[in-house]
Image 1: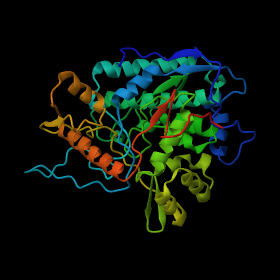
Image 2: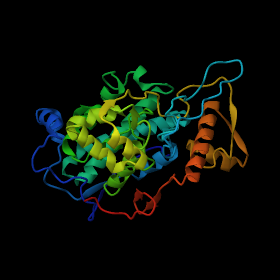
Image 3: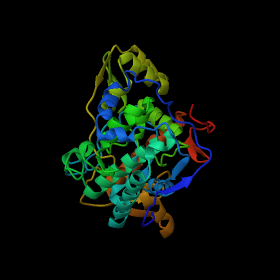
Length: 399
C-alpha cells in the first residue's frame, strides 16, 4: 500500500454510458428523496445536464482493496458447521454468526498505523477532488463511482481508527460523534456527509436503477459485500450486478419464514426510492436470483425485514484469543489474508502464527469453497480489461 494515495483526475474521450438514463420526470421511486434533496444542501450534488468528459483514476484504491479485502466466495445457503469450543472453556472467539461465511471481509487486524494514516490521506484526496471540481458535470457513471468509493473509503477508515471492535453500533464516529450510518465522515464542497446522506440524499434520489444499493459497504456482515476492485465509470454496472447476484442469493439477503419473505433491512432503507410495493421488490430480486431463491421469492405471500447482522465484517470479530495457532500454507491456498500468504511466500516457511479465530475462519472458508466447486457453483470471476465480469461474459457498456 502506498504511503500516500492520490485520486488523479484524467481526461478521457470514450466512457461507458450512464448507469441509468436521466429521468424525464420524478416518479414514485424518487419522490421521497428528491423532494427532500431539492430543499436541502444536498441538491447541489444532483447530476447536471451539462457534461464534462473526465474520469477519476482509482488505481491506488484498487491496490489497497486487493491487499486488505479477503474474498469469501458465494453463499451456499447452508448453516455453517457448529463451532467446537476450546477444552475447559465455553467461550467462542471470533465470528460465530450463521452468516459468517458470507460476504467479503476487510482485514482490519493487519492494518498498521501507517496504513490507517494512508486511508485518511486518500479520503482527504477524494474530498478535495469532490470539492475542487464540479462532480455533478461528470458522466453519470463517473459520478456514481465517486460516491460509492467515497462512502466505502470513509466507512473503512472510520472502523480502522476504532479497531478492534466487535460491533460498530457500540461506538460513535465522525465529527458529530454519532452511530456509523449517521456520522459525518466526509465534507464535500462545504457539506458534511454521513454514509446515510450519501446513500439516501445523493445516490438513491438521482439514480433509478436499484442495484446501486449493492455498492455501499456498511461495515457489518449483514450488508452487501465489499468488492476487491474500486468502482470506476467503466466497471460500475458490472460490479454492481455481481454484488447484487451475491447478496440476493445469500442468506443475509433473502430468506423465508413460513410463507413470509424475510429480507435484509437494506431493502427497507431503499424502498421509498425504488420499491413502491412488494411486487416491485420481488421483480427486482428475481432479476438476480438463482432458481432456488427465485422459487422462494415467488411462492411467499408477504415481505418482512429482519434485523441487520451487526458483527463487524472483519476476520476475527475484533477479538483477540489468549493464544495463537498455526495457519498453514494449505489453509492460505485460496486466501489473500491481507499479507499472510505473502508472508508465507517471502519466508519460505510452511506456516505462520495467527489468531486462532482467523485460522478457523480461513479453514471454514476453504472447506466451503471446496463444496461449492464440487457442486458446480462459480467461486470466482474473470477480469476483462478494466472491469470485472462473471465467467464467459464480455465487457459491455451500460444501456
